[in-house]
Image (cartoon, rainbow, N blue to C red; front, side):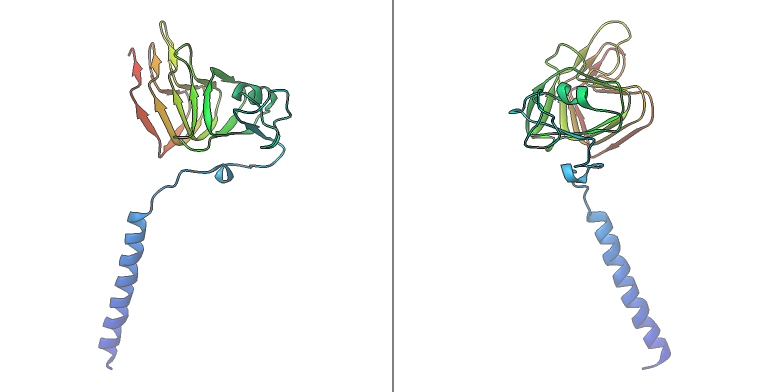
Length: 192
């Protein structure tokens, strides 16, 4: 085989490999993170929540979870991770330190504000694999009916649904950098 023919074969094989690589890139999908995909799960700074829990528990393992997310926030320190099991949690939450919240999936873990207040008011942090719905802050300069973050926030595979704010960000208001991946915003309203 001549040198020219060998080079054409090599170029042809290289092009086929490149094409397969590019096809792989274009068909790759972001998977919803699981609890084990989040930051430092299982360490001392990890707390657990389940609908069969008890806020008097230590909340440090899936066998001794808190009953409410607020109960876990009360035990958390800056940088803690809160793992939230499947279920609906009707709560209006405030986190004064940076936290990570990881649900069991956007269709499985639901935090519902009950239409009586903001669902989650936080400084900064990350939220994975859950739904935030039915938050409401109205009148004046109320921003972020679903989630209000005064600093940076990462949302991954989060549904933000049916929240209302009096001014800006019916579903979400972030005062710092926002990184949003694989999340959906539906039926949120704001006054401005």
